[in-house]
Length: 291
Length: 291
Image 1 (cartoon, helix red, strand yellow):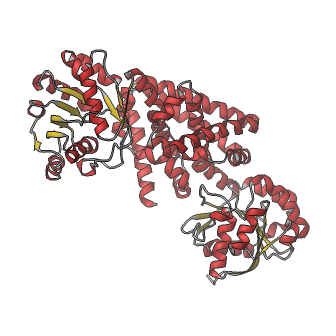
Image 2 (image 1 turned 60 degrees about the vertical axis):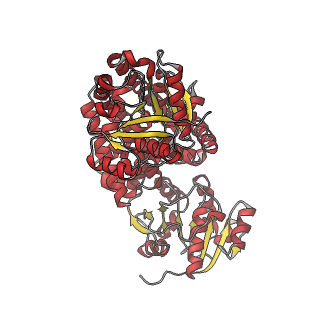
Image 3 (image 1 turned 60 degrees about the horizontal axis):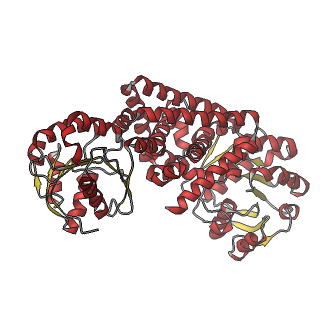
């Protein structure tokens, strides 16, 4: 691939993800100008002083005015209003991409709010994160060897898809494309369900009358298992809302798995229980060995 | 407390736990002689050469013959036969303790096999571990700042309880005592249920027709969440067998929690869903801050 270069990248939401993209492109000289816009003055000042962005815009319409590419990296709740602003001001050929954890909802918003721009829209999801947030957590290597999934619309132009794919590859990521439907099904199982389960487990312990003792004796297994229950409740509620159909299916299917195990315990069928545990241990250890 | 000292400590099963106790006592000069016995010649040779133990016994009866204290550190399945051997050969005043993850089953075996020795028996559970196993993983600091729970029988003599408590405190651990019933109830919730849930989640992913893709896109949250599903299936089946009543209750209660969440998703009641997530996040982050 030719060296990726973009004339003006406008980043809406210069947090961990947006800031890390900016950091990488600036480091590699792959961008003419980075314009940032965001709600926190403190965060935007940091981004400017740290050289992640060249310019802070006071509002979204002026931020996107001359953009060749717009990276929407705000919480999912703000996406709708951001698209309305983009509609009013961006060049008709500006490429628009996002970084949300769910893709079906983004597609629906694009088709509703900016259908005339659909050829230039490339929904995306970088599978990378950190417990840290904000521009101060930005890291040029955040996406190195990480997966980025792009879910082009049926109208998305090949040139737009290539440009966004090149952006992420220039950040060191592995890029795959799939339908938004398949994306939301896969991530319901591997990410959204585990979060729901971790929240439910901690909440169940917290609700018990002996919860103080439970937490006193919780150790390493609990630490790992419950780490994701420390995540933003607001963000994960939004993800549940955006992908509730797949998540409901997966919760049902997981309850069925637990009921099978419960029945084996009740019957004292420890042979079959051990087979289930062993199959899981093999699958997990095979997965870990490939990471 | 006076400096802990034991004349002859016999360790049955010189693995991670038994080896780490030996390592600490030898380092501190708190033991006259350590006699070890175990099934793997290779492991026992290592323990001897590394100076964890002074002597390898060829069988349990000769190992325990002159012991002032016997540490039973074998998998739960071998405990019954170990107690039969101890019965035949140990001094009647030898203090006997164990390190098993479940305590009700150990109490029942003691009462059935060596009731005449009950005054000298101190069931124990150090809450420390590692993914590594065997004497080669022994570490004198494994128990530093870790919890050890002792579950004395109604017949356990105060002097025996003190001696075992001193042993663990000399290893740097925090010692608590509670009934075996309470122990098994607490650890069902904080350890056994999370393992069952982690196995069930990985098994559910593994069973799906799109499992290859699921594992391809699983990332950091999945890594942490599923780590304990890589644990020994045999050991965790044994723990489920030993503590099945509490675990069945906790699985039921957890299924009820998931059903509540499923209903909120179905009804679109995201306000209440966010309250559940937020309560869990607060509880988890408070817990983590205290660690």
